[in-house]
Length: 484
View (tube, rainbow, N blue to C red):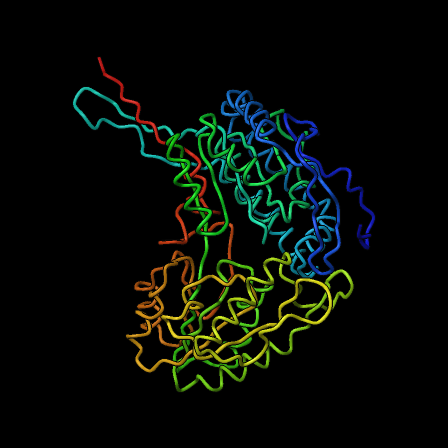
């Protein structure tokens, strides 16, 4: 097994049910370091029966937790934020080790997770609704927003701690109890968080269960005791969950794939734009549903932008973040992902694309893919319509400012997009016509806990972060009182 460059007791990484560490009865699953392929730790996985025990614990705790005042819920969320802050160094190293991202990136995400809990601590005390009033003669009506019940939270492998914070913060703030399933490939930071906070809320309010989708995930989706399932992941998985959840008519919250278009108009600065895309396209090795994946550049700036983007891709320091603190991009998160990314690149070349830079695995061990820039990818090509989820971006020229919006919208996805221009009219038109849940102007990727994140079309439905997310984890009840 791998020896990490920091002191840590991996035996503390266990499922937590009903406020205590719980022994799971399934097979042991190996958790790997993608930079080396070595085993970090083997963890006992949960079976369907283990998952139902966690659901039962959450159901028993719900009546008490739903009655907790918003101030009490806020205290718990602030305590979770404080626990993350106090353990930030350990969490950052675990995230880098398990996902393969640079330490500077992991540290930012750990800080963002703590901030997310602080945001929802305030949001818990600010849910709004219609005022009580007389909408019918002889009656007063009022609206209640109530928690849904047990929330089954299925996190993703690319941002294990941050996405956990998004889901857990909103669920708890709304008054739900939870059963959290971390991704089986990258569970370490979620399990570390579970160990840190197992005493901050009443027993059964927060349950974290490690295991496979076929055991833990299916049990959460199938159980009639689970009122809402929230999943971040691929579109195909989201469709299966939505179909399966129909049997129990539970709420479904899905944040799925993306293929973010970037439109660079002729008045944009290609040098500054390329510097932004260096982050927007290759942050976290491109494993981001909002990554800048398809660049449309006006022909007047296309050649310069291509040159600048290729230069920045080639300048990236790629390697093991545990071995070199100067690394800017690590591996993709697991070996199979590496093969899938390279297969998509090879298929694009077979369909006529050209590799401007990259396109290969790095020599040696580890799930590394070179930062890759492709040209000649038409909108009808497989790559243009498929989420790569790796460090791959394609760039193509356009001539007509109006037609480019149709090209950008010609995708199954609708999560995020960006536009680079100095013209306010162009920017505002783009913000109106682009069919994505987020539109960035002259930037790509910034987020804030106060603003919603979620998409349209095959990118799913429901919002993470913001008050909109908090509302997604509640149900609306009308109370009508007869007067006199």
